[in-house]
Image (cartoon, rainbow, N blue to C red):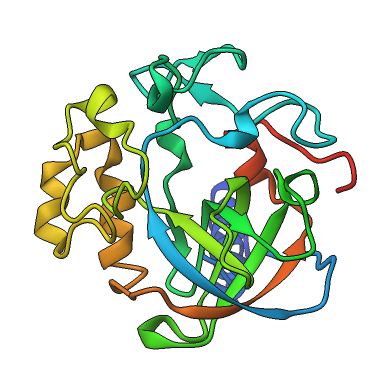
Length: 248
């Protein structure tokens, strides 16, 4: 090694050694799998998809022991509106917020919102609770979708999650026509919604990311089965919904 006679040479050596240290430190993985805290054992269940634009039932007060109801929004889907405002699906002006649509964190993990019906549990048990759904069928087998329940799903007599996916069909109620000017039966079929990714362009631009999620991360899976476990709600979800259960 050359003899260092001045401060300039010393600084050069220091810079070179610092660069070498950074090269040896592994880069942080931005898509690393989140750590989940499980609160229940796994149980089997089924899923369907829907997006009716309606104010979630969890957006009304008194549904469960929570810090606040699920946020609902005005016609823009952005501005949060008072919890006492009637749903747009019942002649009012309160709708689902745009940020209730799903999004991918990495190729095997995503977040979103859902309605649920779990036999033996009431809405006060499930409203604003979070569940990790691990798919066990179709092309998404092995992937995990963590959802926060924002409303009560239709009773089917079995464990059932209705995933909120824009363009997934309006089902029984259609708030998308008064909110966005959607066709009378919603975008695509009333049940199931659109059938191709290109049709996501029919939706308002604000809802297209969640529609695209269905054809990208979700691989257009058709009502996959899954196992589910209750988990401690990630802040990624509660920051959007504004609703946190007092029992975790």
